[in-house]
Length: 289
Ligand code: G3P
Ligand code: CA
Image 1: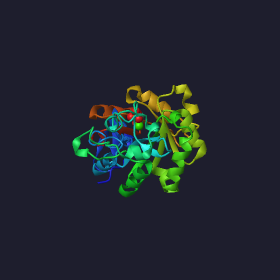
Image 2: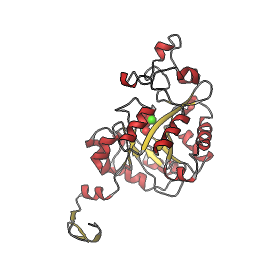
Image 3: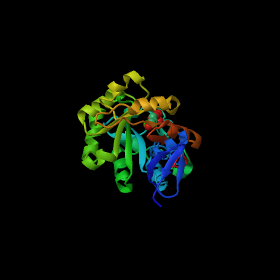
Image 4: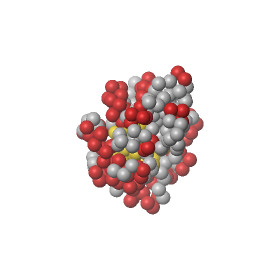
């Protein structure tokens, strides 16, 4: 059965065929495309964050987009890990007891490669490693998933923006198909987002945070998305974001984080957000679809 609006009617929308839908606010919100679910650090409620296992878990759940966090090792390699220290999500304290505070940037890739990034989450994930960005991209190439890549604490890694873009280019992630709808680079650091935009203007970018409404026009010069924590989201704010066109001439989008329950997911959908970044992307997808 096709569902096609043919004319507005008092109290509802008359549809071709037999359906008559209410125009109550929730129904109007439903008319907008459901927000895109994004697996935060992979499907990180079910597998250790930012590991290949978390990518695979998202894939098993049919989640097309994963978010990750990229940093740089002492010897200049790009690795996927959230914290700027290794101790929470690996066994670095045990393996390197004399190396406190275990800064990511103080360890070589070979040293980080020795660490177990899975057992802290569940012993069933023992042996998971901190992936390099290259390994992470290879896995996404295998699964066909898309990437919301966060430049984590770029102020600690001068020049990391260009290095990330170089790696993406070498792996084929800056070709037309990828920049059109498979890749977004985001950061809490507005200067880093600007640098990405100026270095590779074709890439879609996001700013993590909630700038004041009267600052949005400035952000729209270099960011395609404004991505706030969900506690900062209101319908009015989302509407204000959508009023601006981003650097690629399309309305700014907003992906909000970290939404892990159905009720919050529905409330964010009603506010009009475009994406839901979630540790439980299946839960939020099912809540809004
Ligand atoms: O993608 C949004 C979210 O990742 C930002 O916060 O701390 O999880 O990197 P955080
Ligand atoms: Ca992140």
